[in-house]
Structures are given as C-alpha cells and as structure tokens.
Image (cartoon, rainbow, N blue to C red; front, side, top):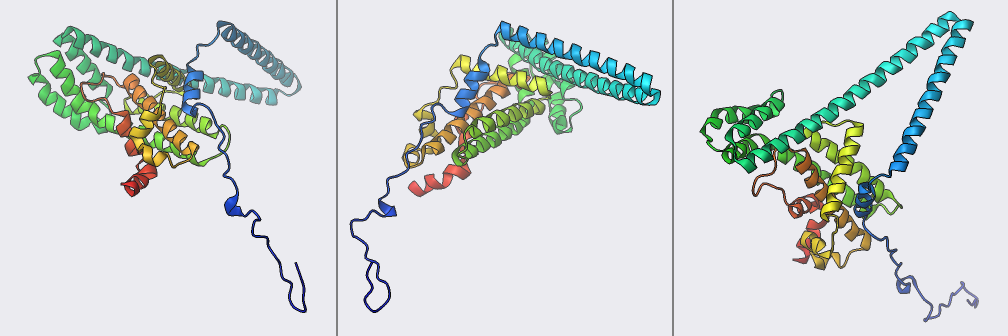
Length: 333
C-alpha cells in the first residue's frame, strides 16, 4: 500500500491465492444409505430379555399410576365430594377412550388378518386349480369392497362376467383386473410420492439424521396408505408391525442391497457422476423406498400379483424422480 499525493493505492501480489484457487470442500462419507440402515435396524429380531424388561416396566408403571389415581380420588372425596366425583368422571372418560383406542387397534389387526387370509386362500386356489375355492375367494373379495364407491363399476362388471370363467386362474385374473388394477394405480401413486419425498430431502437437507427420520416417517405413512387403499386400514400399532414385517421381508430377500447398477438404470451414470454424493444417495433412498412400497403392495394386496402385473421398481423410481433427474438427462442427450 502506498500514498503519493493522491488516493490510497493497494498493491496485490500476483501469486496471492484467490477464492477460485481454493480447494473444494471434501464430502463426508456417510456410509450406507439411510433406507439401508433403517431396514437393517428395523428388521432385527427383538431380544426376549428386552421384551421381558419392557413388559415388566409397563406393568410396574401401570400399577403405580393406578394406585396413585385411586389414592388421589379417595383423598379428594374425603376433602371435597364434588371435586372427588369430578375426578372420578374424568378418569372414567379417560379409561373409556383408552378402551375405544384398544378396540380400534384390534379392528385394524383384524382387517390386516382378513387381507392376509384372502391372499393365502387365493394362492391355494391358484395352486390347486379349484374353481369352487376361487369362487369363494371372489365372493369374499366382493364383500370386502361392497361399501366402496370407487369399486362399484368394477364389481358390476365382475358380477356380469364371472359366469364366463370356468377355471380358477381365469376367474381370479378377472377379479384382479376389474377390482384391483384401479387400486394398484392408487397404491403406485403413493409409492412414487414417498420415493420423491425421501430422495429430495436426502439430496437437499444436509442435517444429520434428517434422511433417516424422513425415510422412517415417509415409509410408515406410505405403508399405512397402501393398506388403506386395499381395505386394510391399520392403526398405530398395526402400522408399526406392518412396517417391520415389510422391512424384515426386504432384508431376508436381500432387496435392500442397492448398488451402482440400480443408480445407472434410474438416472444414467453419466449424469450422476457429475453430482454430489448426497444426490446419488438420494436416488438410492428413493429406489429403496420404491422397493418397500412394492413389498407393502404384495403384503396388503388381497390377491397375489398375476403374471406381468407386479409393478417395476425401476419404472416407479423413474416416474417419481422425473422432476429431479429428467432435465439433466435430457440436457445430456
């Protein structure tokens, strides 16, 4: 810096490092994708000792709360009968609400068991080729959707054409085409929305454990909505149990092992090679969410998928991530 009868002059050395010469910020290796960690951790069988501990703890807490509430009401009745009866009524209302919640959970488990029973009966009819058993499955399927307006047209067509089917395969295929194909479209829309949300949050939000939380909540909501689509609306406990069953199935079949081949088939290797690691991990989480959705459809669907009707995971991911990767793909082509 120099001053010669004029304004200040700053002299900058030519070899001084500038912002353009700064090294890139290294990306932190995060290990397996969030959906992989979530599936593996959720599918682990619980320890019997842990279950015994939590059951004992719940029993102790319930006993303590019950005794404390009883003593509270008795003392309040001695001090002020009016307030004592008010407390008694409030406790009774709370217990009544808990009983209703328990009944709702039991009804949810019964609905899921009904779908599972239908699926097993349909599989048995297909294996044995028993037309009578297939007709019984179709009758149960019609009763299941008898009160739903979105299946009325399909039920009418099924009632008109079921007499033309003279073997179990044809009858169940007709029932699947008329009743379940429209429901499959709704379930696939739920899968695509969940995969899009998980992939977007993973790629954009840099917060630690944000991708795991998003994957957990999105997948549980997706599985619950898929169950509702097929007529098996689950409660809180039913949704958690169904989620664990689906994830355990994925781990057992090795479906959570996703590699670069799936990424390349979804968005193209040339594009993803220029993107960040989190962007690629978002694709992995979205693809795994789609796999969870397809598994949930297989679990909740009252009939097993016919030949060629099982949705493609790659197709679901392509449609789900069109807004995220479609422009980049077109720009490269």
